[in-house]
Image (cartoon, rainbow, N blue to C red; front, side, top):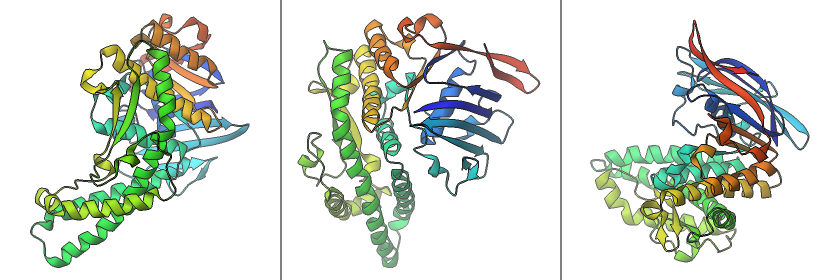
Length: 387
């Protein structure tokens, strides 16, 4: 898979740009703040419908505008598709595939698959559980686009059930009966999400372990575990070496419903939903100790890099290389980690790299260079490409 062309309008610092791309390695070179990361962010958005830098779409629109556009021509196994997304202020975003409108923006998921490694990924090791949940769910959706609907349904039910819990302490019996209905919906969607997360971790774990051992052979072995908020879930289901079964989701749904009944009084008292995939975590371990709080700076970088290299290897095993996006990370890595990343990048179908200093990019990548610079214009400071 590779991106043959990328176009932006009013996205971040880009008033307008259209660039032809090709398989192999391309470096976007420019000083910090010139807009090179915005190019990779745009491709990441086309792939996941979210940014790796911000949690909402508003900052993606160029200052003073109410609409931004991202478009790309994506080639996969000889077939080219054109995908475009329009980000709008105050109204729903819109999307087209081969210039034809789609009913839901989520229909573009799966056309472009990317793995992005950026300095922000250190939060996967040192940050809050929501960072690791997001990593899992975006990887899950990249491989199974239909999971986007499951995630959306779960989030919708969670919001509605949480709103009901906030008033349940002073509600009447009829309203508590409504809570029973929302319990069923939450357990149904939540069990599907957890079952697929567990299957994903089972398949990802060997790739992650191999990546970490190659990057940091002198370090303690890396491993991952799924931490579930369902205390009644048998521990055997959390074993990453266990092969998932087709009926796991049914078992999880039954456990979920039982757990909701157990904690209902506490949930009503606190006004929040206390169990479910929104409270789970992907725990990272080095030896017997959790990486968070115990890993050195170098070990934390190694683990973060291994998570993304593991994701790349897993997606590659599905039959097609994802586009590898490397956002200003070579400068952050020592020689060994830089070499390990360069080895993967040299073998990938397409790699797009940003760098502030050309010397940070390993010579063996033999990359094409595109210069990015910011200039002043009547519309403010905007980014431009220069040969």
